[in-house]
Image (cartoon, rainbow over all chains, first blue to last red; front, side):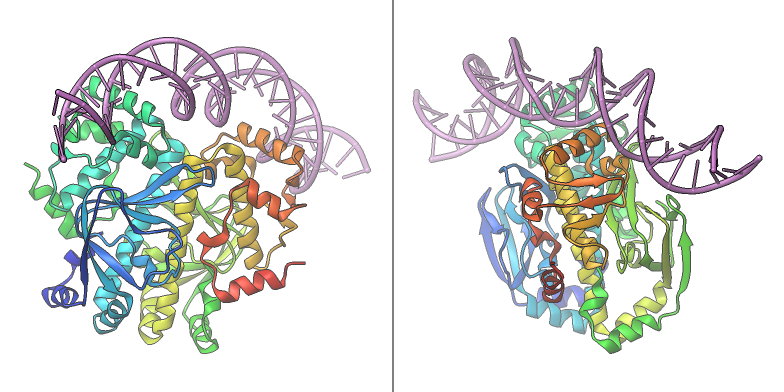
Length: 239
Length: 239
DNA sequence: CGCCTATTTGACGCAAGTCAAGGGAGGTGG
DNA sequence: CCACCTCCCTTGACTTGCGTCAAATAGGCG
């Protein structure tokens, strides 16, 4: 997740010099489809992407989302065939970089390779927490938890703060993240509002009491494995 | 997952020459606990391990299991603090290898590093499928799916076949994998039996019709990202 | 202004959870 | 070798969180 920021200037420069092709995607458009064999990975320059899997019955599960600076399909470096679809949650622009160039870069800059590996490991840690969330927590906590993660990760990407942020998901999409129906999501959100834990109007989210929401969502930030630098960034920008 | 088998002899030898300490764990014993800062990773030599997360309310979610040849906590190489607990599902023996030695090995044998990275990516792919399973599929399919994955992965590890295998989990543990209560697991297993999809007596599992069970569980093996070699191994040993 | 998509509300049904109480199979010790 | 103990598994009765169907309302945006 935003692994770039744990690197030194020369390393970041090297990444920027990678051959790349910039493309934009409309909301809902697929960037990589399940079953694809890709020869390049991409970094999100703007917008939010979701990784989705579909069951045989046609039900959709969003397994993770990514924001500016993230590299959603880095795993395609080693896993030939995509096992899920990455698509744009809102209008996105991304930069594709050929696998070959990335691998060559990794050879020249071992620390970049390490940072990339680490970033895929953090995605794994998020996945584990989501599985706990979906498997064990009741709807209200699930939603609160998702909101917490979203706010933190958006803030790390320079979008919004802990007290005022944006939810780039429709209620149906929230349901697809959490294994809930959209109607139930709606009613649960209303309860969160009634309890004074959030104020939410359309996509604008306000959080009157950040600590209270974290508790309601059983949210412990540890699983995001933030670096020293990221943790400071969070604290410093906390009003 | 069993990344060793995609390597050449000299590479495997180098891994075997790693300094290591062998230890055994009783069923239920923790090998790594959430919050631990470890300085070594381990490979499973015998038995089955589970990675578990616990919610604030005390509910347990098994997020992945590992069998002989797997390296459950390779991610500790880059993520200092364990975000989940790894424990023995049955009596286990494992070999601990210091991080330093592993990293040095990675420098000398880049292909080992790649294989290790890849193996953590496959774990991620399994996680995604589990999230889909728990989030979207009804209890019966969830269980059938889990059984399918278990049988395949055990078989790859040289344990059991597609038609006769062993389930190293109690019904309660199956429930913890799937976000289901143990009573419901019990009733669903009975339905699978009534439908002739499985025969299960204690831990001994027989599968009369492998294809039928796969369909019942909406199981598509693609997400395991088997190597050429693994795929051949599966086919060759099919009765 | 009017269409389209997202949110909201209501009524009803069901899959899965919970509580409580047997039953069986292995292991252990006397 | 039997008796007991301890896990698991099984069964029954009841509850509930969440899903589903259907229809109304409310914002964006062309």
